[in-house]
Image 1: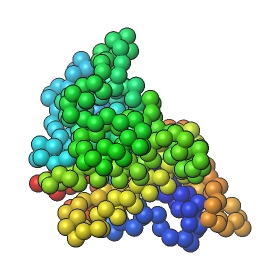
Image 2: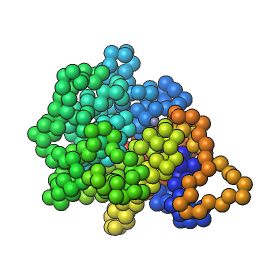
Image 3: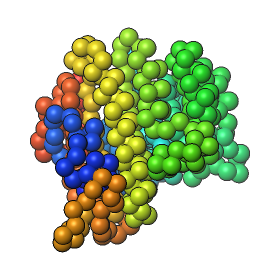
Length: 356
Ligand SMILES: [Zn+2]
C-alpha cells in the first residue's frame, strides 16, 4: 500500500476535502526503507521477516536464513517478535485476508526457507509456535495428503492437530462469534479454502454475506475480544492482505475496497484502544505497508474535481512490487521512534523495546 492507495480510498469514501481515513488519524508519521538482503525490490516474505525478526532476509525467506541452501534455517533463527511475546506469557494472534499461512503472517509465526512451504507453516503455527488466534483463509493448507506435500515435504491434518491442542476450529462467521462469546482463548478460523473472498464485496453487501465469512474488521474485533483476556497483554498482527493482490491485478475498485476494509479494521483497533486509559497508555499501534504494489499513481485531469464515490484517474507502472519507501503511522509507547525515517528492521526494535 503506497500513499496514493490511501488518497484514492479517501477520495472514494469522503471526497478530496473530506475527512481523513481512520489510519491517517494516528499522531506519529514516518516512513521506512523496504529493501531486502538480496534485492532492492522486496517481496512480502523478506519484508515481513524484517518486521518480525529485526534483520534483513533474502526474498522468499520466512524468518529463516537459508545460507547453505539446504532448506533448513542455519544458523538457528532468533525468535520472532510474536514468539518473544508468547514467551512473556502474552496472547498472540494473526488476522489476514490471504491464506493464514501466507508470507506476511508466516514471518511472525514460523521459520521456513521458502514462503511456498505453506503446509509446513501451518504445522509450525499449530504444533511449534502455538499462535493463539489464527483467522483468515487457506483451509486447504491445514489438511493435505502426502501427495499434496509442499516443497518442504510437509503434509498432514493440522486441523485435527489443532483440535487436540485445544483450539476451537471454525469455518463461518456464526461459529466464530459463538466461540468468541464462549470465551475461547485458542481459535483457528479458516473461512475459505484459499484466500478470503475479496473485501470489495463489502460494497455490495447482499453478495458478500452469502459467503458467510467474517469481514476483516469483524475478524479483528473477534481477535481483540479473545486476546484481551490475557492479563499479560498481547501481540496481534492484522493484514489487509489483498490490497497487494488487487494492485498486482491493477484493479482499482478491488484495491479501494480492500483499503477501506483495512481502514475499518483500523477503526476497530483504535476504538478498542481508546475505551480505557490503561489501553491508551500501554498499547503500541503500528500501521504500515511492507511495500507498494503496482506503482499506483493518481493522475490529474484538467478541470476535474473529484467527489465522494469517484474512482480517481490513475496509472500503474506495472504488475509487480515497487521499491519506494512506505509509510508508518503509529501511536502509543515507543511510537516516537517511528516518527522519522527508519529501516523496516527498526519496527522490530521498537516493538521489542515496548515488550520489555
Ligand atoms: Zn505482492
